[in-house]
Image 1: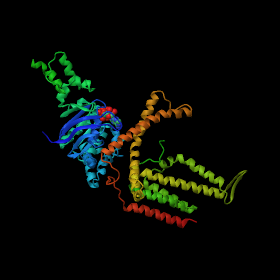
Image 2: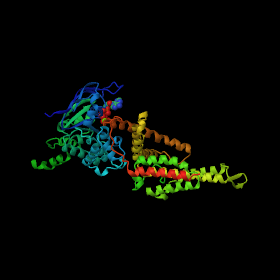
Image 3: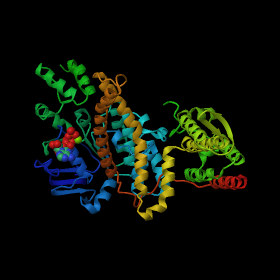
Image 4: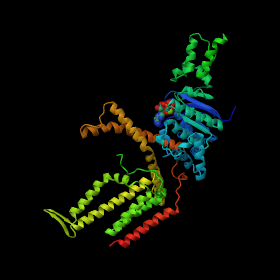
Length: 279
Length: 264
Ligand SMILES: Nc1ncnc2c1ncn2[C@@H]1O[C@H](COP(=O)(O)OP(=O)(O)OP(=O)(O)O)[C@@H](O)[C@H]1O
Ligand SMILES: [Mg+2]
């Protein structure tokens, strides 16, 4: 059992003036160094949970601990420095007038000395492959490039956790792949914990673990294989099952023998073209 | 629109481009005062030569600069005419019925128009040679002493830089909404003025709604990235005051002295 970097205990939360709970008795842990995907239908409370992890909301009841800091006013800035967030809309989180100014924004806020800042801006942009765009203005960048700059802004602060709140949902397939590849690389290079909130079960299938939220509560938790076994249930929850899983299911109905639930198209293709040899 | 030079930045390499934005701002501020010392042909001549020197040093094509002045030419011409007809000083030059033109009027008109022209030329040099974000940095740094008087200098500078950052984004958005409305049959380019103004409403409302949504998301993102006001913040962009910046201001003093000597 690995050490928990985030623990959430019986958390309840309502938006001011609302009677329904946006989060109802949510309990979950995040292990250090894991890639956790959080999925759920629209309005299931994913963004609310994400914002809580960043101290943008406080729980009404229950406790949240992040990197050994309890979620309280006095620690909120320490928490924000250790947990970096990338939001959905690439445009609405780009603060600087140029790429380098934007990466420096978080560093400036944290009072990092100028010389350190210059180094970190370069190093972070290098790591997301955007160093050549140092002086570029945001409206000359693609969505995927803007998200990579946002990631550079996050890693410049050397956080322990990166939280992506549907960071790829407004991107085209290429931009999406670009961004995910960048995050995967960063995670491998250093001991990062990644929480990715997503609608895209394809993306979630690459995680170590998936948590399904439904109407503000944790509905299921498990490895991608376990979660995709649920199949019909996921569809009922308003989620879209990845194509290979759907196809396997249909093939099984046609009396094809498919051993397990393949999450990637490649694996399924291999299973299919070798299936005749096994007979 | 293409020819507008106000607020445009031309990223060239020149001694003027390399000056510290604070030096340029102070220079302009001083120049605006010094211009008023000129009051005769000699002093206006000195001023004109000085302005040409500035333009030369900025490496900006003078034709480009003058063609960009077209929108203000009318104002200058109007000022000139106003002085010609209304100033009644000196010898009478023309007398065509009710129209009396005096020598003093022509002189006044020419001087004031020239003064106006020179001011516009020099101030547009500021924006042409300094990127908007540098101007913001310069203003923030110059206004810093006023923090003691509770002037929210950091906030003003941040507002300016965020506006600069979002202008192109909102322009793109306007364009998109406009096309969407045109696709639905809206007509922005023909018809009586009243109709055209009406057509703008369905353009502005979505634009405002989206701008507010952007603002809200941006505020959340800024907070998530650790923004908590100007306290304890360091700066990524640093300004370096160098010898040439002091030299520029000395040059301005020399001009002032010359004008003082030349004026009558
Ligand atoms: N600012 C707010 N004020 C009041 N209620 C809100 C606010 N933001 C969200 N809610 C409500 O809280 C619930 C959870 O919203 P949340 O944004 O967390 O959902 P989500 O899972 O992120 O959905 P999506 O997939 O659309 O991003 C929803 O019922 C939503 O209507
Ligand atoms: Mg959301």
